[in-house]
Every structure is written in C-alpha cells, then in structure tokens.
Image (cartoon, rainbow, N blue to C red; front, side, top):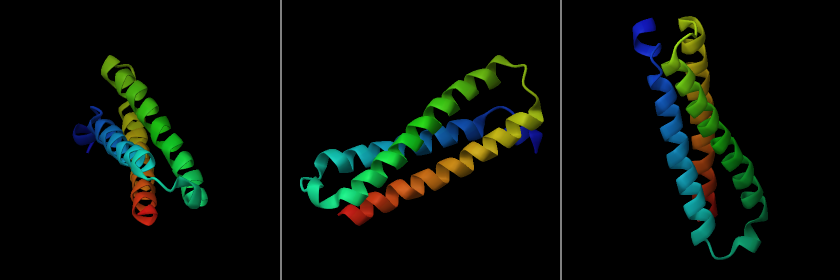
Length: 102
C-alpha cells in the first residue's frame, strides 16, 4: 500500500480534479448572463471556488514537500487520502452548482 501512495500521485490527482472543477465553475460564472437572479448559487460558487483554490494551493505545496523528502510515509498516505476525499467533495459541489444554474 505504501508503494502506491507514498510518492504523491494522489496529491496530483486531487490537484487536477480541483483545477478542472474550478475551471468549470469560472466558465459558468463568466458565461451566465442573468447572475442577479442566482444570488444563492453565486454565493455557494464563491465558497466552493475558494475551497478549490485552497486545495490547489495546499496540494501544490505539499507535493513539493513530498518530492523534497523528509516526510514520513504514513503521514504522506494519510494526507494524500484526505486531500483526495476533500477534493472529490469540492468537485462534486462545483458540478452541482454549474448544473443547477443552467
């Protein structure tokens, strides 16, 4: 199990998922013309977008730390799984927001 997760591949997957979801969310925000009628959806999009940016930033710095070495394998595995789970929740929320707004 350590061989599969100890090199930071899940961190890259988390980063990529959130980058795609954030791009979809920004596309929704800039393409949608009637933003005034979507007040609650826009507020949720701002919160979810902030979470996606937070995950992207954290995953980037953490992957740099993993590549640099010096971290325990158990900690890398735990944090990778946590970031993946949190990014799946955030990406799902991005998809729900963009589908509800259409």
